[in-house]
Image: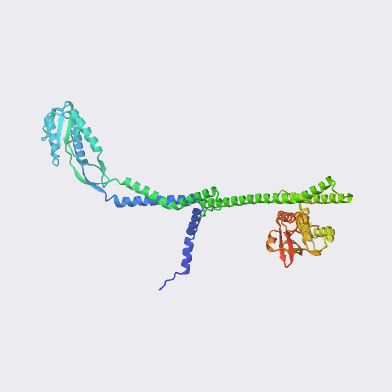
Length: 521
């Protein structure tokens, strides 16, 4: 049977844990967005793991790694205490060094306390080492005070190197090989000074000591820290290597290379910036190549289009110079032809100069609130004579309502003049050109339509290219400069507008779109 949790309990739990969840999500977001925080978290995790490993080792192996030793500290302390008691008894009783009864009594009483260790001997000597009083088990009658002092210090320095801590925390002394211990002290009698000497083999007790495992514990903690830190940061280090390799590949000139973006931290941002840099470099290099190609093509086309009229001018002027004409009418004809060719050359040079300025963005626009109604009406009126000469009629569809745009009037006149002249020049004769003006979703749109039977979709894509002519039979002599539509496109794009061409049945339609602007009186 499935037990269902009441909804109010779920809501209570959600409310209780909501701050913790929010804190977790906030911390997680901070960590994944900062490599500094990632390293801090990794360091803390590794540090905690090393502490846990060290504690586990100490709890499991320190207790089991213990040694059984013999402790001589109590035996040594007993000898030292006995020497101190004898000195204290003599000095408290102000004993005479010649009081044999008292001294024998003191020595015998202390000897009686040594039942557990019969090797201990008690000697009382004068300052020269002559034994005055001694315990029953002592046989010496003369001792070397100097040798005994050296022996005492040598023994003490030896057992200082064998001090340990027992399991219960007390200090113990464990010797590899036990020998006789000597405790010597000077004592003041009422009638002189002497030495109290207590010597013997100290009594030993079996005990256990813990081996010092702190070194292994520290080594384990360091090893765990290093290994875990390596494992945690290994992925990030590989990513850094990947970024470095990708950057090296881009530096070698492979601008198509891209670095994989992982995560949201500073390394990911760095990878993104490197990719953006490579893309921008690739774009700029491509633009430079295109600019070089454009420059080369422009020079080639200009050279060709300039050579033709110059050759004609030079030829006709040569005929005039050499007086190769029959009469004055023929001379005048030659001069007229040369003059017309020079005018075409001037138009070409002016168009080329204007196109160069427009494409290099080296021109400032004098924008004003211009009525397209009046602009088109005036332009069509000015082209009336040219239309008559070319047997072309312009039909206009211009509304009475004013339609305005914020543009440079002179430049926009050039746009529509180039489009209309192109239509007049290439329309079948007799022909008809339709000019329309209207609004479309906040934009001003002008369309110019004329019949054109020899344009396909592929040619339409190139129609705004400089020096491109749809009719290959036409040249600078029969057509324009080849820059009219390219200039129109550059001007419209400088205004932030659009210009394009479409084919509708046997008609070609040019569209110009600009931002709509409220007309001012």
